[in-house]
Amino acid sequence: MLELLEQPEYTLLLLIAATALRMSEALGLRWRDILWEKDQIKIRQTYVHNVMQNGAKTGLSKSSVEMHSLLAAVLKSWQQQTLYSKPEDYVFANYKLGGKKPRVGSMIGEDYLRPAAVKAGVIKVDEDGRTFYLDGNEIQRFGFHTFRHSLASFLMAEGENPAVIQATLRHTRLDMTMHYSHARKQQKRAAQGMVLEAIFAKRGLQRGPEAMEQ
Image 1 (cartoon, one colour):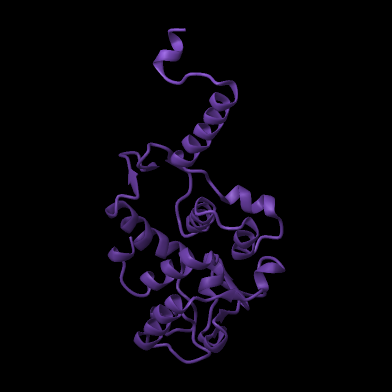
Image 2: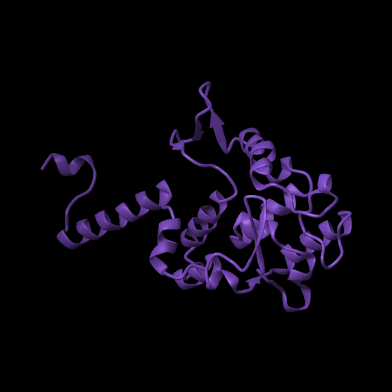
């Protein structure tokens, strides 16, 4: 999907996919919120329904977000390209409005994100306009928020500490983070295999078709 996107959609998607920032938080960013020397991104405002709001969704949401050097390089590259690169300018400024406001999140999702997802083979849309993943499961909602779930699921699959995942998503409760983490089919099969292996080993049972012959 990233290969199919140009700026600033490329940077916006990468930012959200890597940090789990909410769309409203990303759109509310000004360049002064990128703390280059501290390798952090400060969440001070959110842009919801075309209205700028001070503060964040939750207390933890107000905390700074860590910024890896690879992400910092992408953001710095975009800052060098955009017409609005001053500290008080929005990172994802609306060119049509002369940079006075950020871009509109819903428009970015419909005009750029979904088409890129279809072209990349991430999702498919039927004749009735319904959206599906390639495994056939229907998607009720596909947008930038999806990548918060993707990040949680990826980190969980890689064996990351749940506390780190919770802190990354800035959730107040761990059970909320678990709701965001979705097990992959391979993981579920592997987990099932672990149980069967333990049962067979404990009971000294045979495995496979030959077990049915006994």
